[in-house]
Image (cartoon, rainbow, N blue to C red; front, side, top):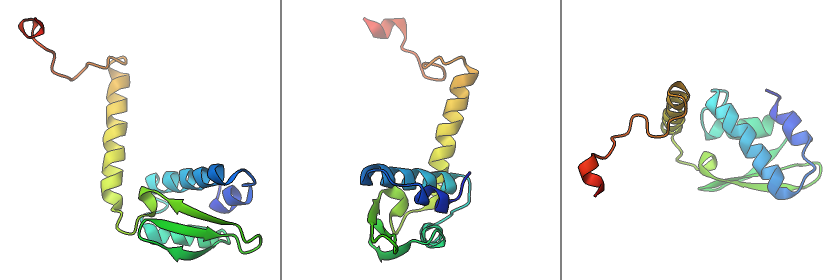
Length: 121
């Protein structure tokens, strides 16, 4: 995985795409355990040379001090009271379900209770 500095340095796209790229990078760092909390997100942004002038209840503002460009980063991972363990548990459940789907050959009904013939009248 490349560094957040590399990701942010390469952003010359529109603002929406830049936000999505930053969020995708940070989400993958959370899943892999490189970032474990909101302070870790702030540290990652600061380590990449970005300032974080505002930390709202549900957002973090990232500021490029050289260009003055700002991004208001919103979403679950930026929330002040976000609980990492709960998110990881949800990710683990989704991953396990996907693996089970592959194991059963992609049958979307596998593991679900099927209606009885008498129930379909």
